[in-house]
Length: 268
Image: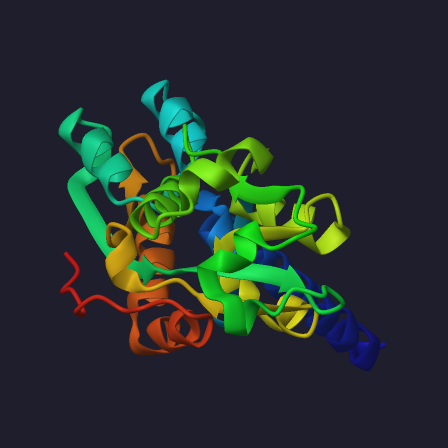
């Protein structure tokens, strides 16, 4: 009888300890929502997977899209915690308007663009370079919408600089963001396109196409930056994720996906 009471007492202690652990886990759990430029799709997915392993109490949700569209939404206090833009000017403007936590804007990468064709395309993009856009048989050229997508603006600037814009423009097919632009070419909805190098070298697309990198001096430098929004409900979790992306390993992942890296910045 005495042994039975001891066993029951021990079971109760184990049960209470489990309840206490669950309560502590729930109390410490946080959730952050990220608005991320579409060129980050593959790199960010990898980083989030690793972050979840290292920080299991922080849930991360991400939406990919056009940096310009996110900028418009965040002007109206869209419910995001973090913003990763393909154009650092967008978070800078938001910070100037008082929408950034600690008024801090971080610089995480420099983007690059390429002319991309599917593997089965007869166009020798590596040989023809920018002239690939004018090759016989090219009826549709995919670029991101330059009205709100930084990669679209870079594509237009490069084509003007290299003297092919006016001939190419009537054939433009505009993607809502750079990921959709890549999808247009990959699916055959366009014959060729100008996309982010970060998408072209990603394992998910690397074997699906061939590309020619557009010279950096033919379009404005694509500094990419971000911010934590002032109205975040999980500031410490947001800072933890930001620092994870900006640390040495995060920078190495970005570099592997074709981004240039700015000088490492000290974080507050």
